[in-house]
Image (cartoon, rainbow, N blue to C red; front, side, top):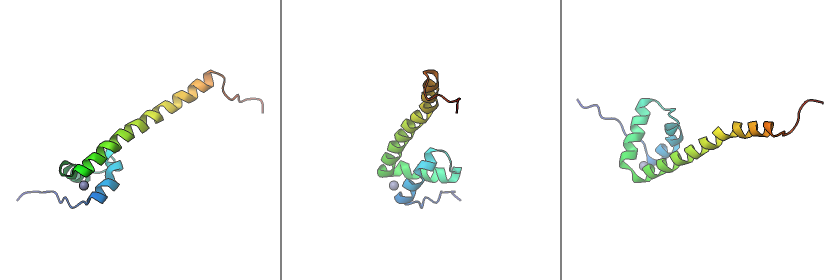
Length: 83
Ligand SMILES: [Zn+2]
């Protein structure tokens, strides 16, 4: 008996799940299904590559945000106190 994965995900479903897949929020079975689909589907593979790059740049921005606030505080941004 061969345990073949039911790879019955459509391209539409894969694209919808890509964010969670890239965020590693899916369970192993689901991720395996998506990985299998990406291996065989150029369209979704390209989409995954694009979204992974987008997610990386998004994370870079999020990582920088607290730093930017810290700099604002150091250089005398909006002062709080006497109110
Ligand atoms: Zn596809």
